[in-house]
Length: 239
Image 1 (cartoon, rainbow, N blue to C red):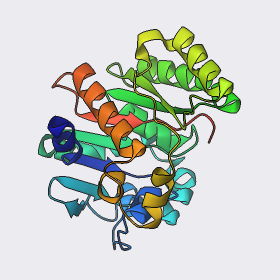
Image 2: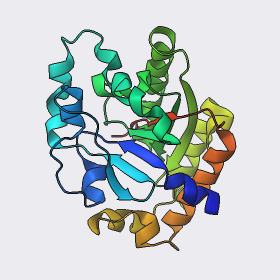
Image 3: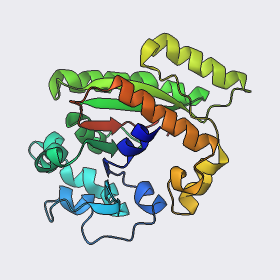
């Protein structure tokens, strides 16, 4: 487990327009967020949450970024250009994508080597899965030859529900070994932690949620080569 903890503490994350990560960790509003960075008004300035764990904060202003980027030349590469000077400063860079297949998500996919797809084990979540796969394939063909799907993560899983088991069976048929063996169980601590402005490992280290995410980290480390630097956490198809 210690390797997983070390891995998590060396992460560098960028966030979605809803600023969920920034809010969940209790990070105060920063003068320069990823929105100002994308506009070219400020350089990236990571906020140090704890030793080895930095976050590029977000704000609701980012919700208007796609409209502002639409006429920019090379708009698909804006995020990649921002990250390039910082690549060697971090072991892993994780980009938390917005819940849409818009220009911000396209930027994240263009600069990433690996995509992780969290999937709620519900019927409607399955409907967007094929679309995500199509978008990733197009990005690989046109913009980023290095991108690969690193895995599908079953979330909000309840073994007592037939629907949860059926959804997992379906994604196993579609993605096979790409589906992680660790399922993130439906756990109230995962919902409570953001309200306390804490990560799950600090809030409830012995909860099922903490156990599941530690096991997931172990799986990712086992599957990931040392060369992978940038990963995108793709949107959940149900969002």
